[in-house]
Image 1 (cartoon, helix red, strand yellow):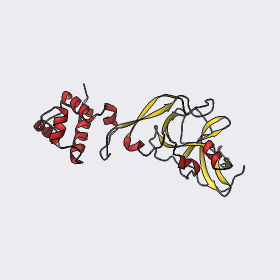
Image 2 (cartoon, one colour):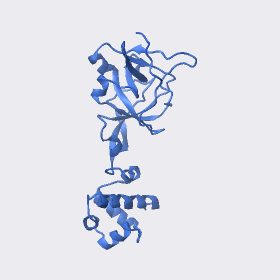
Image 3 (tube, helix red, strand yellow):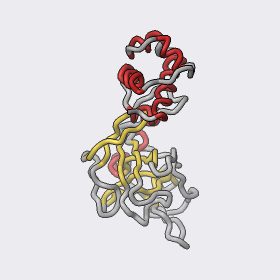
Image 4 (cartoon, helix red, strand yellow):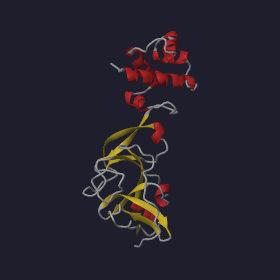
Length: 231
């Protein structure tokens, strides 16, 4: 049986469909196999939606319970997108292969629509990764190739080194593309040059982190821009 909170969310989505012009009350009622007067009274909060009618509405709209739980008023379209979850964690002690998955993470379409070849992953313990992350954090990665060749400031990135995949800071300066781990307390941030050319960068810069499931951050913060550094 559907709980009261889920029933209210289904009513809100039905209102959204009618108000946005995607369906009339009559058409929505016909699709769900319920009476139009009853649906009208439900949307006007004169009557309550029964669990049986809610199930019919879900079927008619081709939605699942996770779809409606993720939806927020203002989202253009309810629904989720299945994001592959990496089998191995990213960080020391785990040579994560981005082609090996162990399930999926459902994210709202409003959050994931613009992502290119997204992946979800857990982070392994790594004292050198950016300080806003914690071991076992669930993150979502965007693998848009245009970002790989010209990484902008303001994000944290998954990069490849001899020990496997790591989460690091990136920035451009006069020496080229630079990467840095989290600074040791009391020491300055150490920036090193990453790669030697476009092809090399594509192999080394694997993805940008666009979502942290622990804090729901859109763009993780990063330390102030540095101008120094070396190879």
